[in-house]
Image 1 (tube, rainbow, N blue to C red):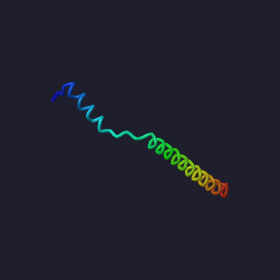
Image 2: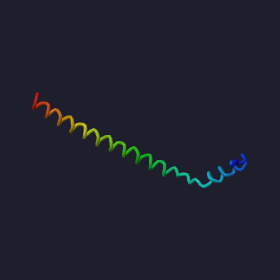
Image 3: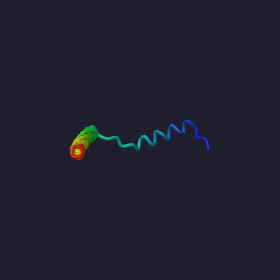
Image 4: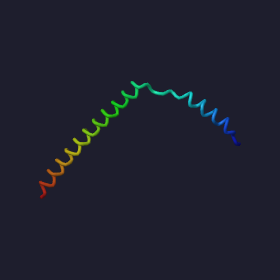
Length: 64
C-alpha cells in the first residue's frame, strides 16, 4: 500500500511534535553524570589491573 508524499510528511510532522526534548539543565546534568561514571569505571579497572599485575608478579616471582 503506497502512501502519498504529502500524507507521509504530515505523519512525520505529527510524530515529531510528540517528541519531548530535554532542557539544557537536563542535558548538562546527564553529561556530567556520564563523565563521573566513566571516571569511576576507569579508576575501578585501573585498580583491578594493578591488583592482577601484582598477583601475577608474585606468582611468577615465586617460581622464577
